[in-house]
Amino acid sequence: MAATTSPYFGGRLTRSHNKASTSSLGDSNAVKGPSTLTSKKRIRKRQHVSIQYEIDVKDETVKKQYDKVIPRVAKGEKNKKGFTVVMSSSSHSSGDDWEPCQWHEMLDNIREMRKHNDAPVDSMGAEKICDEEAPPKIFRYQVLLSLLLSSQTKDQVTSAAMTKLKAHGCTVDNILKTPQNKIEQLIYPVGFFKRKAEYIKKTTRILKDKYDSDIPPTLKELIKLPGIGPKMAHIIMDVAWKQVTGIGVDTHVHRISNRLKWVKKTTTNPEDTRVALESWLPRDLWSEVNVLLVGFGQQTCLPVGPKCSECINRQICPYGQSQNRVSKK
Image (cartoon, rainbow, N blue to C red; front, top):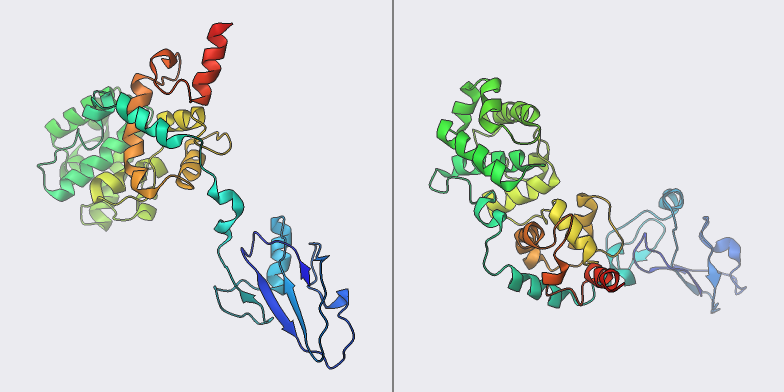
């Protein structure tokens, strides 16, 4: 019996060899490839030798070579080489059971600190600054524009810009009639207002021509729009379409997730943080955690000079513990 481990194929692959000879099976009958097959046990039977392989594929080069030998197949199916995939998903490795220490307690403490819902995001978030009484298409369009404007801009500034746009007439047809320089005046002083005005004009034209003045109903299509990134798209899907497709990770969520060690390894950008959070955080918390952490980051866990002394997580937060040690010196 020869065995190694395969994170690439994600499970065990078994193969039976029928031999007319009763001689033992040599290494020449093993799967060829750069991985090492470590022999643990060899069973010899008359007319039949059963061998089990678990193939350890370390890098992409090796994966490509093995693809030629053992094509990937669906769970329970046999490929041309006679291998059967017992467990096809590679996500069931031992490391996937990881979750942060005391995260339940940390989350409950943040909820307690945020119970008054008095952070800027609570009154000026995307769903708060759009006209909920407007027809659904117009409401969704406003949600999209509010998220587009929010990039690298404080909630208060985004809210003021949306107020001016709504007073002007924030509909697809009216924005298409509005000159770009006028849109610039309406949204100033949001960050990169000139570029965002250009994105608004281009995106609005696409919505008119391709989506009947509505917004795309899928994450994939939203991300293709000018000025719409993954973080915005996930929040748009949640607020506009009531579909949770992922966690909206902005600078606040990114910073706090790393401070709390809610990521297995330190992440350097929001998209990596999103992937790390979604790997362990229960899906029913994905929508809540965005607004919860954004508000927490606006009020307590500030980018500079975080108020660790006021935070009830300070005894269990890795960052808060480090600050406590520094203050005692």
